[in-house]
Image 1: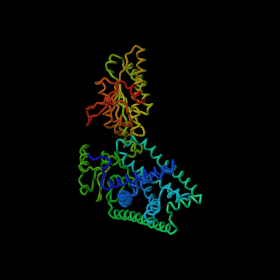
Image 2: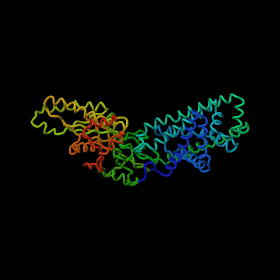
Image 3: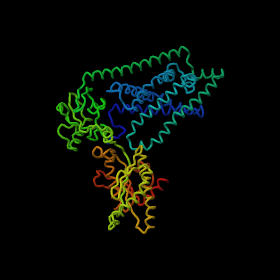
Image 4: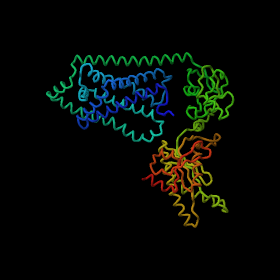
Length: 556
């Protein structure tokens, strides 16, 4: 199976590969500068080691190939875009990427080019002395930050879908802040030292001789090369924008007309999906999964023009068959009209603005806790209904605060049990909240059982299933009476895990998915695989005889 890290076309792989080479170079370069905080010898020693690789023929070819490939693919991606509308993170990535050449070109010309052409000794001391104390030092410092932020965003966008990345992000944020801070500290420390030495005429002459400082004529030649390189960059950027504008104009000349039943009529560019056309023109169009083809809530009935549309793909056909869609139904996120069509939105907002927004739902990955009281039927046999209700309310009064204290919400009560969800900022915090809540519920139950024993009543036992998975949060029910609830396979898994606790004689079964998301590093040797009814895959889960002990492991 292909790794998720390298999924995509060859252009994507080339962009990622070249970006990783440049990221490694930038990281080592920044650490190198930061060593000036300790001693000049450390700074120059690491630079000599880096030059042994980057100034070697193979290293140079690899580095500059990565630079030109990465830059070229960035300009190519701009020229191939259909629209300049994009997420903020992507826009920031592009803007920062375009700012880099404005300072990087000057840096390369006055270092590597000067070294190769005029035999300049471009040690770190030369580079810093060349900039200090003019505005160039601040421009290069800005370049450092821009390169680093651009690299970190790119790395995050690449790895954000892997399982291990979200767990390491809190630690990597610290590293991301440390590296440029360390480099800036080293730059300022070494800059002050060199500038102090330059104040001594004797030392200044020695520095100039040691670095083979360029003459005024050589500096003029360097400025000329820099200006020509910048001009070439502006020309390349202009060509990319011209191609983008030309393709957009060409697409407009090859536009398509879409008519919405009981809605507007719009003209859109060919090549866009019907869902993208709706979103681009501000037309309400339900799409629970965001247009990823993972649901069928965006489906439409194509009343006119269906014959000109390509046949449904295997994925679309399977999804439509699963919901027994009528004839003429298509997924708006999958069809790309090339001829005029008339479409009816099957799940369009009904005019109640708040209802329409909430009922679409939201897909999240959250922790779910399913809890049930053991032996409830036998315990309450022969009791009056009022006594049963009183016992249940006392029971819930005792344990529910342990759930809400961790940010959990009881989604619904089901007789002697409940379903709770932990709607926090991210899956990791939701998983941690679920673990803590399960342990706190166990402690709260122990206190409640002491009260029951004091009253002469038998103690209560419970079973809990805890799982982390994909959920949809939204309104379920008729307009005006709908309540917000959760649906999804994660609810079924948590319920089935809870049922298994009765067979195992344990208080809690917590899934491996939740343990990993929470960063739980306690004893997991007891993990077992469970084949749960209605669940397509075996679920590894950890049986916990007494969930109170879980709190001790978490604290440890």
